[in-house]
Length: 246
Image (tube, rainbow, N blue to C red; front, side, top):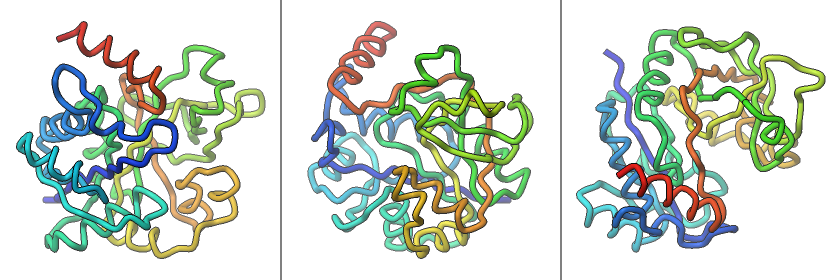
């Protein structure tokens, strides 16, 4: 039976909202909410990978597991690979990279992605959700993905393109990309050893490094779109939603 580990990259020095992992919602830090959501999936071991001792201590204080990594990583994938090697865990088939700033992601979507990866023996998988407004299409802070086929609850087509720009006019099967990835262990090792590609650097999209090196990314349909926290406005909006629901 295939085994998956969930690794959550997290750092204090986010460009637009420094210190966001420790911002509180319902009395718990954002990173603690994400850790607990990952544990609810029952997929496998969950570990936060961070360059900051303050995050490490926060996660452990709330019953989680965390490991210190280098402060020189250029991407979350590089960070989780170091964390995985440091943990020294054998017999892991898949590494799931869960964003540390999406505390309201649906755990059922995570479970479905993991199952599809195993069933299809895919190299890399990710999530996307339907786009319901033109505002999302034109918002260059929101990454869009074009899938080879229309997404359904059961299929797992490959991604043809990722873009921050509105690609709706010349393409079909366009979805709102959700920044969660699951890799075969050997594929993540290859990925972090590739040089950053021209497209990755130009468009600031890490996943283009994989595609530029011939690695296919499969896309699963998510039932809901989590709210990522990039700005103070994002934080306040999500805080209001989560505290209202509690």
